[in-house]
Structure formats: structure tokens, C-alpha cells
Amino acid sequence: MAGGMMDRRSILASAAAVGGIVATPFRAVAVQTGKPSHAPQDEYSAAIAEAIAAIPYRRIETTGREALNIWERLKSSGEGWPVIVGGDEDLAQIAEQWTIEGGARPQDILARADALRHPDSLRALVAAQREDGVAATREMLAKGDDQLLPRIIDVDQDGNARSLSPAEVRKTMLEGLEASEPEVGEWPAEADAMGGGLTVGYDLDGKPLDKVHILILPTKEPAAAPAYLRWGGWNACPAPEYHVAALRDWHRRYGAVPVAMTGDVINVRVTRRPASRDEALSLAREQFLYCEDNVLQGTDTFAPLAAGLMHSDWWFFWWD
Image 1 (cartoon, helix red, strand yellow):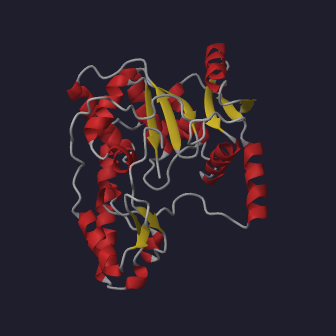
Image 2 (cartoon, rainbow, N blue to C red):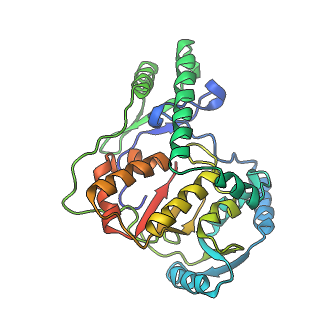
């Protein structure tokens, strides 16, 4: 994750409880089961190839080094809204989501977005999901069956991993039920902007990929990109219409536009930054509602995220 990944507690699924998902407030404990499951490799590869072929948008191949320059030219051409989707694996993830979303029409997603008011609608959604998660977790723990517990791997500062005992898992999950909003934290002396620039099209070491794909979507509205890609609706990642509503509101307030999208990352560029610390902290809390992993698995507290928002024209979002 750009901007430096904090040490994190990885959750590996063995959860049979609650349909395979254990949910708690702020996802103190979460099991990743919402992303596409994989069929046998040959069938899976064939399905992905078919899904990629089914994407009805013009696709351009370039390099990671040239991707942003090409994106700028395509944006100015007026053909549509370009989105950098990364390398071959990233394109496959985009295609897989395209298929899983079940053929929802962009205009239907956009119509649902029209009925939303960001951030109020997102706040209500998150509150309802947390309430459901608390109830489901309490119900599962009340059964007292260790076989229903997820497997939690604890990784220490030195990279050593161990599985938590059933008692430790229960304690962790109960603590998660009482979790509150992250603290504001201390304002950093130097802002480490989340993302700091385009990350899609580069590997984890910051080296540009040899091949990067750009899709040209048939819309002049940047915020409509998630609708045209049927993007979202898994784990804690909101459904496509919530992405559209958020991007529309942020475009109005900050000139925000989505530049790049992989299967789980969005790079957004803005033309206006928060003008004060109070505004930046308010925006950081809003972005936490939208993408809690940026804080829970990134900055830990709001202040570093807010400082980054004041010092960079790029916003980085990543969902586990």
C-alpha cells in the first residue's frame, strides 16, 4: 500500500459462521469472502479471458511510465473518460467484477446514485452494516462453538506470525464489538501523503510496469466511472452507486476525478485541497466512512491522513 503499510493483523478465513463472514464495528475482525472465488485454474483463466473480451470499451496498452501522459491526452480528446486500470492482473480483476455484478446497466447504477446524498447516505449505510455485524457476531459467539471461529494470524513487529487461540480470538472479537472511532492522533511534522501520486501501473517497489491498460469509458462525467465498470459491492467496499455519489460530491468540493482503478484501488486527483486542519480532519473522517482500510490498515489515526490531504493533489483508496 502506498504511503507505507502499517503492521497489520491478517485474518484468514475458516469462518463457517454467519455465512462465512464475521463482521464487527470498524471491521476490527473481518474475513475476506466477498471477492470472487476461484474455479479450477483452466476454467478460471478461460472465464477471465471471456470477461475481458466482453468489456465493451476501447482499451489502450501503454507502459506504467507513460500511462499518466497518455491518460492526459485521452482526457483532452473528448472521446470519453479514460481510466488507467493497471497491468494484466488488474485488468483481469476489473473484468471479473464486471461479470460478477450481474450485468447491471450503468444507467441503472447512475439512477440509484441520483437518489443518494453524500456523505449522509454513506453514513447511514455504514451504521446499518455495523449494527448487523454486531448482532451477527454476538449470535455466533453465543453458540460457544470454536469450530465457528475465524482463524486469526497475529504478525508482530519482527514479522513473526502465530495463530491466536480460540480464547484470544473470542477476546479480540469482543473487543471489536466495543470499538470506537479511531483517535485524531498527533499532527505529523512532515505529511506523508496517502498515495502521493499515481500508484496504479507501478509495482510495490514503485517500479513502472512494462504493460498497462487504459479503458475509455463512454461518459464525460468522471464520477460515473464506477457505474460503467460496475465497481464495488464486496467486503467493506461500497456498492457502485455509493462510489458515484462520493465522487460527484468530491468533484464539486475539491475538483476530484478518478484517474486509475484496479480491482481494489482507486487513485483520485484533486484540483483543490482542504484549506484548514479542521476541514482536512472532517474530510479524513468522511473518507474513513468511505474506505476505512486507509486508517485501520494505514495511518491508524486521522491526523496523518488529514495532513496528507492538505499536502497532496492525490488521494489513495484501498479496500482489503
